[in-house]
Every structure is written in C-alpha cells, then in structure tokens.
Length: 106
Image: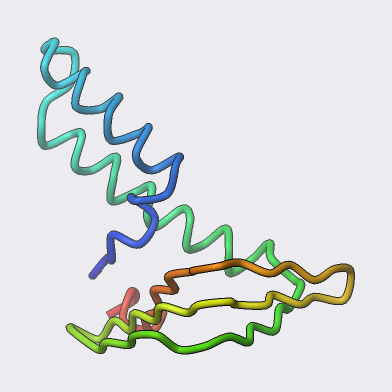
C-alpha cells in the first residue's frame, strides 16, 4: 500500500517524529520500527479524517502559487477566507496539500 507523508509536518506529526528520533538514538526503538510507526500514523490520520469529519468548508482567496508533482497538488493562498455553517475565519497565508485518496489503497 502506498502512503503519503501528509501529516508529518503537522504539530503532532513533528512531535511524533522528534520522539521517535530520540527513542532510536537511545536504542529503545529500531529505525525500521520507527518508520513503521510513522507510516501507521499517516494511515490512521487519513482514516480518521475520512470517517469522522462530517462538516464542509468553503475556501476563497487569492491563488498565489500552485504545483502538481507526483500526484500531489500544492496550493498557496493569500487572504484566504474559510467559511463553514458555524463560522468564518480569514487567514493571511495558507498552504493546502491535496492528493487522490484512491492512490493510498493501490
């Protein structure tokens, strides 16, 4: 099964990576096992978002940059407005990384 490293740059992903690096350095965990934990983390985050998130958000903003590389889209928006049924939030700059979830199951 292919996996993307989508969530590793999130706060929780970076903390997990730092902790695993420390455990590998101290000989508590093998590097192979640490990699397996990170792959499982990405898979678990994907499954949780697919099954537990039910709300929808509309995003509008100025498209500053976009890229498509290795089946992954990256968008950088400026003055983005996130609007849901409950609230609206404006963000100066946001980076959105998107991929086809079907590629994760191949």
